[in-house]
Length: 247
Length: 225
Image (cartoon, rainbow over all chains, first blue to last red; front, side, top):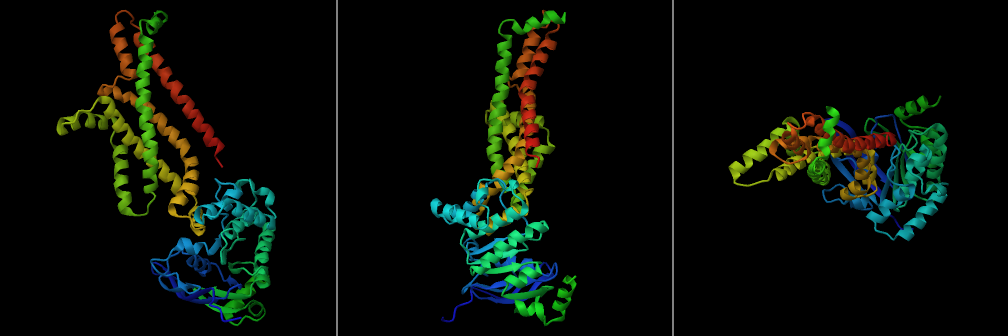
């Protein structure tokens, strides 16, 4: 195989809210097909980092390259980029006025203008895969949190993104529903989807991620293969963090 | 005495005249309501802009209609505009102008409030799916906001219908004006005329506004979640 351009490169990314720095120069290279878990204490900037990659936050410095195209310019067509970078949020963000199927079809039909038949077939297949084929005509209010979150993942997948961003997607779920959502993400990892996952589920990160980045106070303190990060964290800050979580 | 007075309603074409008056009331109110809803939604969406320069003029417009009584607006447009700008406006047109301006202002505030009360992640997930602003409003925000707006919207509509009572003051021959005319003509013959006439007008307003307010309450309960 020839040398591939990394699918995503982040260079010295800086984000501030007023005077308050949130990200102080983040560097990251994401190879295609890799799963990267982003760990760190609350408020370390990990969610903000993901949001920057999807243009939901304005950045003050540095660069983001999607394949080799820079996303930091006034002329960036974020609508286009967002079709290549899917994102799922912590809050169940389905549209309550639309059924499950309508939620999934909205972007493929209206934004991507793909033929209905094709998208519907894809949606049904994805729903089948997450075990919710029978809920296609339900409204979000009829679903549990875990089901809603699985639908949100299907909805993001249906636009055929190259990269998926997961922002603490299990954080507001009841414990018994966390598993069903993580299973779906693990399945995606097996299929070779490139993913950046912000999570507090350490065991899950260890199992699914290829690499871990550990963030604190707007910096990446450690970037290591997942197995090594958990068995032998190099930085003191990461050791402390892992210790606290070990009950 | 009161009992005998009821026949005033059936004297000549009195009842028919009252109903025609009511028709004028409803005509002014319904045209103004339709204009208010259409323009109000557009202005309401514009007012969700975070740009202060966009917000300010609409804010001033809304406050002008909140602070200054509608009656004063009616007088201002009815007496001052024609005298100074050489335009001749019939009283019903003046009524339509004032009610549409007022209704639009209030409606825009209802729509704006409903949209900004939607959870922020509805906007973010729309963006993350690549929806354009127009698509986001069309498919996601406005349908949800509509649901939240309908109860206060109906409330506004009943207020507009009731406020048409002021139109007597600029000489629109609506239901109250007709009532006054009938009372004046029949006062000697029927001393209890005002009781019966205003009583029937009371019932007419009630029959129009009560179902609306019930309907709104029902929707509110249905959509409470």
